[in-house]
Structure formats: C-alpha cells, structure tokens
Length: 142
Ligand SMILES: CC(C)(COP(=O)(O)OP(=O)(O)OC[C@H]1O[C@@H](n2cnc3c(N)ncnc32)[C@H](O)[C@@H]1OP(=O)(O)O)[C@@H](O)C(=O)NCCC(=O)NCCS
Figure 1: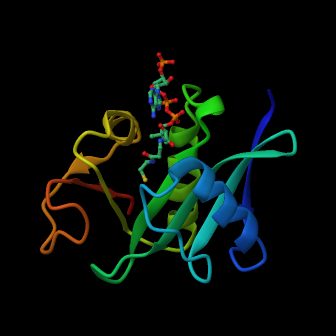
Figure 2: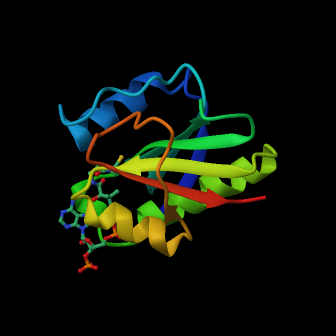
C-alpha cells in the first residue's frame, strides 16, 4: 500500500469525486458539490481510496467548514481521516482562515475520535445546520 494525498480541482475531477463519494457514502449522504471549495483525493498507487472537502463557512469570515470526508472500507483503520484533517487544516491556515468547524452524526465514533486527535472541541453553533442530534466541532487555528 502506498498512500498519497493530492489536492484536486473539483470541477476537473467532478466525475471521479462523485463516483468515489457514491462508493463510500451510497445514499447515506447528499452528493457533494464540486463546483466550489477545495478537494482532496487519497490514492493507493493509482486507485482513489478517500476524499475530503473544505469550504468557507457561512458562520463568518475566516472560518472554514470541513464539509465531507470518507474512506473506502478497504482502506479504513490506517488513519486516513486524520491525515485528511491535517491537510485541510494546513490549507485553511494558508488561506488565512482563523477557525475550522464541522459536524458529525452522534454515533460516528470514528470521526469524533479523529477530530479529538486533531485538536477539535465540541461547541454549540447559533444554528444547527446539520443533524439536530449531531455533534458540532471547532478548532482555533489562528
Ligand atoms: C469515518 C471514517 C472516515 C474513518 O476512516 P479511517 O480514517 O479509516 O478511520 P481510522 O483509521 O481512525 O480507524 C479507526 C478504527 O475504526 C475502524 N473503522 C473505521 N471506520 C469504520 C467503520 N465505518 N466501521 C467499522 N470500523 C471502522 C478501523 O478499522 C479502525 O480500527 P482499528 O483501530 O482496530 O484498526 C470512515 O469510517 C468512513 O469513511 N466512514 C463512512 C463515511 C463517514 O462517516 N464519513 C465521515 C463523516 S462525513
């Protein structure tokens, strides 16, 4: 196994990102919009095995939203989600953003643990934009 994470142009890689998203999420999450934001694909040699997205948050200026991340079942358990958190944090800092936010389903223990490992803490946003019962996470990156 040889994993490399590449930043990709969402518009140019639209089909690949959407196909990968379908394989990982099926109908459990709405399809991603590849026309804006920042996108990454993790490859095992030339096989795409994971994806992640970062977009500006509607919560305010200088805030990024970790919108979606997923790993193919065949490649889970190797810390790929954590790596995808780190590349997105690096990009957010490069963009001059000061804070990151995201949300997870209450029972998504793996995502919660990875967010804790990456230094995120729980917070209550002004409006729960996702799951009513979800967990909302933030990290100061200023
Ligand atoms: C959440 C997710 C991204 C984590 O993937 P990952 O980076 O491979 O997770 P980790 O490397 O931290 O794996 C942690 C442990 O949980 C296990 N694991 C990870 N995801 C699992 C899953 N969905 N079901 C069962 N076990 C899982 C791993 O095998 C590993 O076990 P181990 O420590 O005994 O080896 C991945 O499970 C996934 O893509 N799930 C579906 C989509 C999703 O929920 N995305 C996040 C919300 S947008």
